[in-house]
Image 1 (cartoon, rainbow, N blue to C red):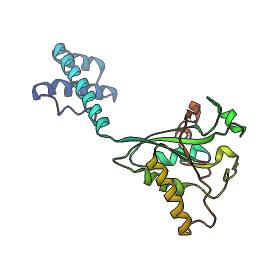
Image 2: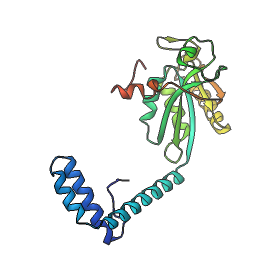
Image 3: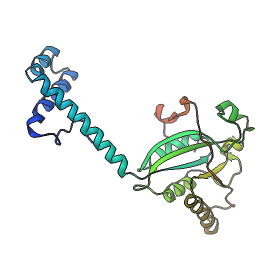
Image 4: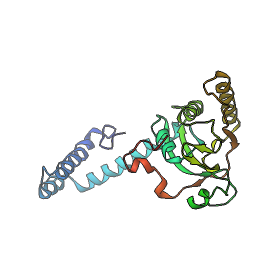
Length: 228
């Protein structure tokens, strides 16, 4: 929703709020001085502005709650090598609400990036995706997962070698497991790949969010991908 939309307010209250918003926007753009904005807004009842502001805040919160209630939010977790490029690719899919990079599938609690890089913790670099199943299905995410990386190389993606770079689907329920297994079978039988798929299908265990500097790593630098 546009945060400047006041159409849901009673007509008698819209003018004050709209006027204040317009004046402040113009001031921010350097088109009006602060004194002009102060005089114009002060001519409007302060109690009216306060009441309108509270009503606007309440309406925005109610609409946000309705949007979240109508969404069918689910999780999906994939390992496809270096998580920077994987995260960037999934973020571009409509229906994906959020993506976090981290570590899964290992034994050590609260591993650091340095721990995982030793290859001794059993963790894979993964992305945990929150998606709205009303807009994008898990099957569509699985299909994109197999398109974005090489599922035929064991514990390797490109120049990155180690168990932490393994290809894996960490399923959150039986439906996800069945979807992943069926997709692997279909792709193997289709001949799309010239070698068998080695992607592991494992139950999702604890997800450990990676250090903050890894989150949206490419996006923060204006990049789309690394070597994927």
